[in-house]
Image (cartoon, rainbow, N blue to C red; front, top):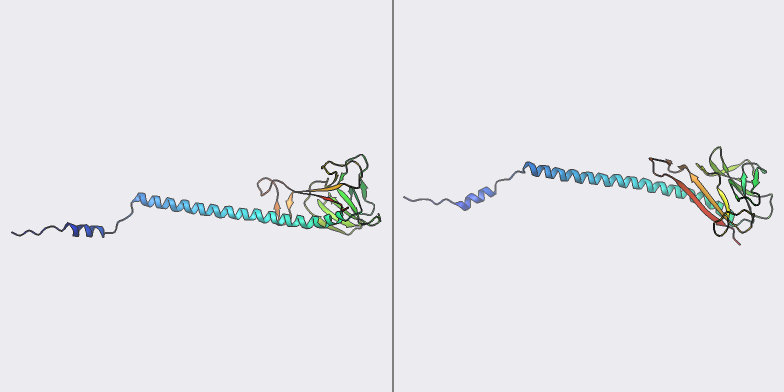
Length: 208
């Protein structure tokens, strides 16, 4: 009797060519990895969008601030006489700070020459919360900055940052603007928003 030997190698090859299926554990692991990857991508996307809005707000605020103080800085640097006090519209609606009192107020009057009849006045309007500019105090005015909360905007300081109490000629003009809203883009400032506080400050001195 002839016996045909069993071909083990052929059996193994046929077994290896059969498609293998994923187990339930492998499927769950793959789904978990996919979900974690998707959550990570979405988190990065949301963070990038928030960072973009923050950057856009800062750039917009900085641009408005630069435009607001550019002319003021130029006029102060080239001024012959500078007076700090409180005032508004009207040729005589300005009260200069007296001697032996802190030289700080909501308005500044700038004279380009020694002629005291010609001046430019910057003042804070408490009804509109705006920093406004007027020439010779006439009714025509220009809005320099909006949404300002502080009234003591202008201060005369010495070289060490101390507030002057005398009307000295060689003082440094400090300007501080505190905003409750950024003008462009319109963003409220406060709890739950982008910023808790927004402030612009600069110091200018006259050219010798």
